Length: 277
Image 1 (cartoon, one colour):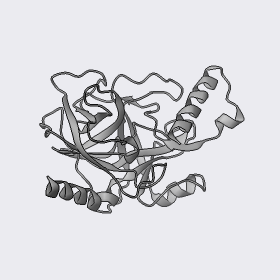
Image 2 (cartoon, rainbow, N blue to C red):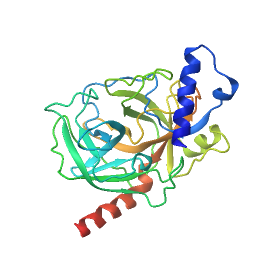
Image 3 (cartoon, rainbow, N blue to C red):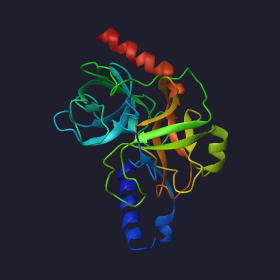
Image 4 (cartoon, rainbow, N blue to C red):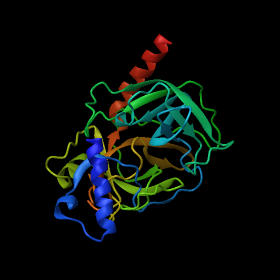
């Protein structure tokens, strides 16, 4: 499925450059978020000190997904970002994606768990937790997001952060962290506006910018959808999961894993880790 989505996106990009989309390629399909904050804006430096860049190998970091620090030892991300968690790389404190310096903190993943009910495709249970081998040191550049209350349902304004392509058909990744302001779309409304066969579950949360061309595929997979609070830490309400492609043209809400549906699961995995270690 992931390979198919990437292949289709490349074809779509090529067609756009030629100034023409065929009817077949123009058909929207559900796909994992593909690293885009479509028509977003550059975030203020370190506006999201909880975001991390994840890579498959610690020795040679290459960004694949976003993630969110929830305390000094743990990161929340999407299940579809994880194949072999042990040995993965996490870099916190980044603004420019390739600029690793004295403000950044590079950590190796020594334990991770994908939700046991995740099937490997686009759909529910798309959540994973990762443990770092050395705790993060919190400061103005690196600090956690808070978790919501169990089964809390949010509404109103939210913010999405991620690195990725700034336009639907530009394949060059943005150099700096991008952000977009969105509105939560409740489950019933999201279900109503998405296609009938959308793999949407009540454990998802949706958001929409309510503007043309800022919709599906927003943000890096695994990255944070947050509610920002004045004089308090941001609250992690969603993990970037999937949307419809062509990105930004389908004009559907973006779909996230609703974190409040997994509070007990996160606590269970953390407790099991500490019992074994």
